[in-house]
Image (cartoon, rainbow, N blue to C red; front, side, top):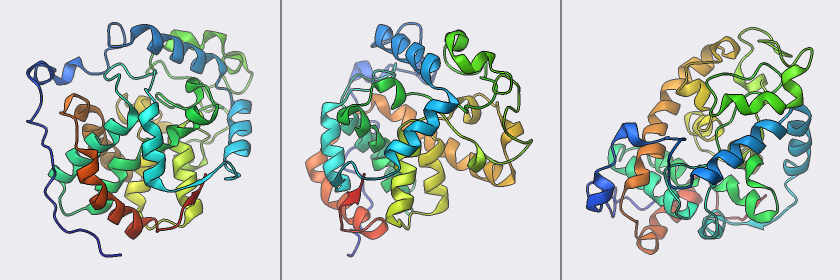
Length: 285
């Protein structure tokens, strides 16, 4: 299908309410006092207590069978009208709103990269697992490697104390089960929406470029792309991809104070991108 060519976003970051404009970059990711402080702390405490190496293997076996549903991308985004991410300190709106906010920010800055616009739209749709029965602590939030020592650069690092892997003979060491500079592709990350969507897209045969798939897979890996930790697990490919992840992060994070998008008006443009880079058939989830 032909992609709609008009690159002009239908809302712009400067068109925000006065109280939203007052939010500065340093105000984002405040985990001590935010729009849903209790939910955020509770979600991360459960996540850091229960996300073990064994749990990650179990979740990959469960969800990477792709036998839970067969739905279109836009239907999944509509489902996210019903999800508020309980790990997010910056926004308490449905995740579908954030999808369009991110995509439109990217479209304004990178009008010549339609695949990047699409990545902005779909990057969080793996969170649909939370609407299909999974608790949010294994769906949302920052991700981190399991099978090796937990980083102090993670949010609420003290909450790893009750995780069984924190005292495991191998998993509690710096490299754990991995080799120096093995590459993130060989690292088992905590289970969440990033890995789930990445695996779904690979299974579907998407033509989204590697840079876009990498953004999807690691955009929540904040201890790495924002905390400058875990480089010892990275190879040269990971380091080459890091600037792309950081570029994406600017739009993912700072779009959360933007005005609300007109989702109805934007749908035809993004549907054309879905058909170009993913296809017109429903995906197996």
